[in-house]
Image 1 (cartoon, rainbow, N blue to C red):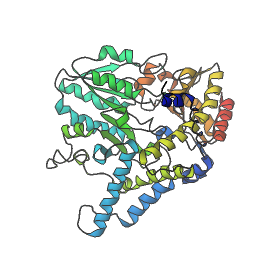
Image 2: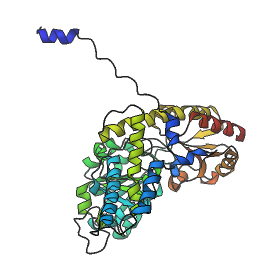
Image 3: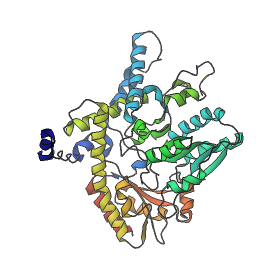
Length: 427
């Protein structure tokens, strides 16, 4: 045996890295002015509240920089720089280049813009696959393609688990498949799909993917390059930002797609050729505040690297660990009740859940239950949440859909206990 081999054999194993500190929820909550009231806000899948850093950025822009951009005078240049910094901050959030990020009013609008941009590249007989689990934004946007002779196929979700399974996609893929549109985590299930694996399979079939990440992005790190996706949409107003939607497109795909701006905007001008009327200036400028908030959380918990990707990895790992602690007692309570049906996989799927929990109660309408929880000043919601096809597929329209609890990292265990007590009284 070589001496260096012997040394390796006898070396002690490297010590395990120290566990990450628990999230300091009190520090986090101090950053959000809207959390100062009496209500426990558990309707966050519809929109999160804003940290003070975002509010300050928007206020500063409107107070000083609300001028026309693109001019030569100093204040115009400063305003343009602030807008550019906001776009760069949004791009860093998903590990994209700034010119790969289209900003618009919402995910619904952004996906409709994308459909119009991709339509000229599709021929009669080409096929686009959608699901019956997604929010309607990633289904309805694609249906008008049928007017061009494009065939729309549906990837059905598993009726027992309420998840998308690759074996149900397999028979739909064919030589004419051009695009597969699906959700990272359905907003009425909260279960995280393996986007990277699905994307690899779709790419092997010669098609592209468009992923709705709206219900995933507030909870876990989004890295579009690691996922390998072609298009990825999320709503920044659900990721602690202002009311803006973000659409990522790989640069080569954006260059090839047809511009949706004025006719004289060159096709090479990405992403501007997709942003008719330009972006909202003050809201885009405020996006730097999202990154400032996440950086502050990282520093407070001992983060020691200025690298944006490492910082985001650490922060979202903190969020995920805390959210699992919030999720566990709620799921345990709901599953212990024989009259409650939790939507989604059973306990074997809990590690892949984000803290969005939908459920029904036997013999009770969802619309009847939620007002009873309001009395405890706990904000939750009922309905189909624009996932009408999923609710119909689950047979829940007659019950007014589902009751949905949607938490994020700024929620507390004490709030979960309040919710459970209110549910106990209502049920």
